[in-house]
Amino acid sequence: MSETEKTEFEPKIVAYVCNWCTYLGADLAGTNRLEYPSNVRIVRLPCTGRIDFNLIIKAFEMGADMVVVSGCHPGDCHYTAGNYHARRRWTLFRDLLETMGIDLNRIHFAWISAAEGKKFAEFITEITDTARQLGPYRAYREICE
Amino acid sequence: MIEELRQSCRKLLEDGTVNVVIAYGQSDPEGPVYPIFVTKPDDADKIVWNRQCYANLTTYLTRKEIKALGKSAILVKGCDARSLVVLEQESQVDRATVYVIGLACDGVGEPDLAGKCRVCEVHMPRAVDVTIGTAAEEQHDSQERYAAVEEFMKKSPEERMAFWKQEFERCVRCYACRGVCPLCYCNQCIVDKNRPVVIDTSASLKGNFAWNITRAFHLAGRCVGCGECTRVCPAGIDLRLLNASLARSAEENFNYRAGMDPETPPVIGTYNAEDKENFIQ
Image (cartoon, rainbow over all chains, first blue to last red):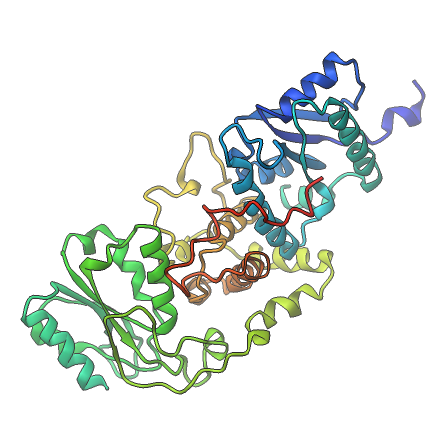
């Protein structure tokens, strides 16, 4: 391996996904032998409605360069309405982060169902590219030093 | 007005309608106004009402010491009445056990009006049992309501981040903002939980960011803008700016304003299948 390759920036991405859709979507991507970047660390949670905003902050505190939140499409929630509640919450939370000056390009939301293994792989590939372009998220890391 | 107020409070205590009146008191006319809890009819003369009456007294209604006293009467300004509505919506206050005395208010603050009063739209409190006094007609200028937020949002994200860094650097984590807030009534606050530690408890920038984001977001779609957090902050952090940005978001996205109408379901805890989702891929 050459010297430049060794020092190349590899983003850390934390994905909070729901157990019933996106996690199975990721699973399907695996069983279909679809390749997606290994930069993503998947954290499985029961439902998008369970994903506390403190988890997102925690991820940034621990040095994540990007955070992904993904769950069932509207109408498909295993618990009927968890994703609807989450959607409202994220609308407000994004506006709060914007006021705080936190880069919204660092947080991505998606609906990925259990059948969308391809979408999962493509989505992760796409945001990993974005994360590479954006570079390390120094702004929040400086806060945590 | 003050005599009328004292009279009605005395009467409520005398005939046993309530056991305690939560009101404003002042021992020295030049000194500060503080909350008083009147339990004897003769003490009703200690109640004051002037432009120093900033405090939102509804914060005491959820305290177990006050609940233990039984039926209570409370003085509310227009803004405080809004937080009472939210408390009732969230089943924290049983309205049947509280006698609400509304105070017509032209704004508090001396010599200058408090910031919140300049854009006040509730001079006459709503959903009260009785209103005392009269107030000038309020101006309904929805443009003005979030002027401070809009001005702040003109800055670049980097500038905004730098601003909050500067602000939160001063935070000493005294939690006065939490203590004074009528809507921060959790028995155990998330910041006090240590298994696992969710928010760093030291007054470091890291912990201060996490805490202030959490405090603001736990009030999303609930904060009525009484401004008490900002008033009590010993570090002078402009917490109202964060609250206002969330209030603006709730109004823009969900056409919801906390505490304005008891019949409107709260924005968090309900949903609409048609809610916007243009940020979701």
